[in-house]
Length: 107
Image (cartoon, rainbow, N blue to C red; front, side, top):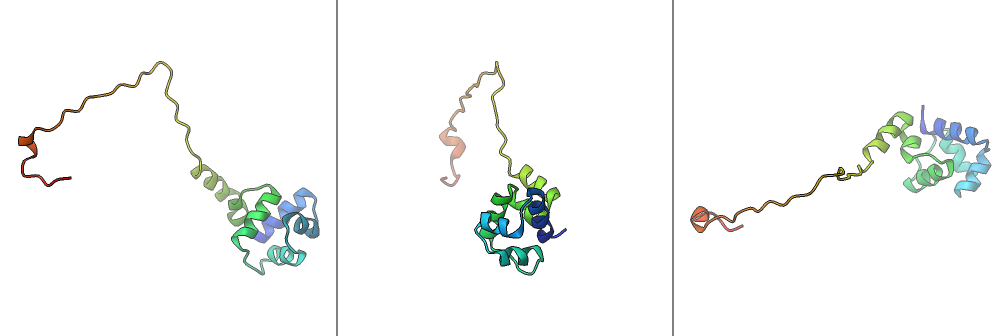
């Protein structure tokens, strides 16, 4: 399935015509038609505008739902929480004696 197919499918699911999609995305009907027929390569801004208008991820438009899933998964930022009841401890690290660092280059 091409990006044009995905645009057409999402537009149809929303119940919009090419003109309605063009108006909502701030593009021309001619541009939407060319994109649906894969006769042009869109600029990044155009893909972002379409994704926002069609309420989908940019990766979904570009690569389809399977890769869109992986793109979302890889872009997740894990939320790290300290488990309850755990206490953070600090450890004192002794400084090296002069005799231990003799002859080593300065950092």
